[in-house]
Length: 91
Ligand SMILES: C[C@H](O)[C@H](O)[C@H]1CNC2=NC(N)=NC(=O)C2=N1
Image (cartoon, rainbow, N blue to C red; front, side, top):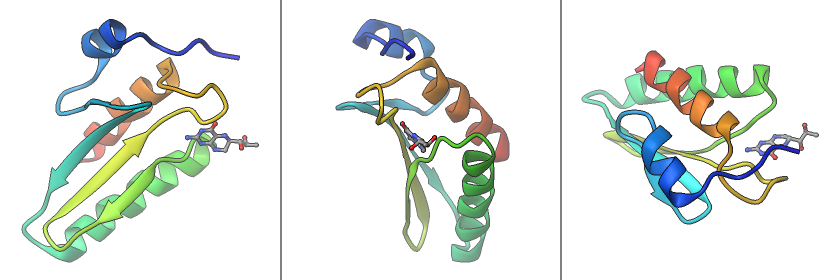
């Protein structure tokens, strides 16, 4: 089982735009068009399902909020950081 990252490790490793929120890391991505946000959420979901590591995705009219945590480990792990980097590449 992977180790959870400390607050300092998350601060050091969190990709652009991501920050700790309790036991998760979170980023909100802005979109001019609602359906662009929906398409992005779908890209995120496909990546997550390929890696069997699933974020919480909230789709709003002009933004998409993505939260990542490792439920089994009970906190933020390296896998969350790596996945967040992949999500940034989709934006
Ligand atoms: C059996 C399956 O691999 C596990 O339930 C996966 C599913 N997706 C998951 N997603 C996240 N974010 N954390 C997990 O611990 C997790 N576990």
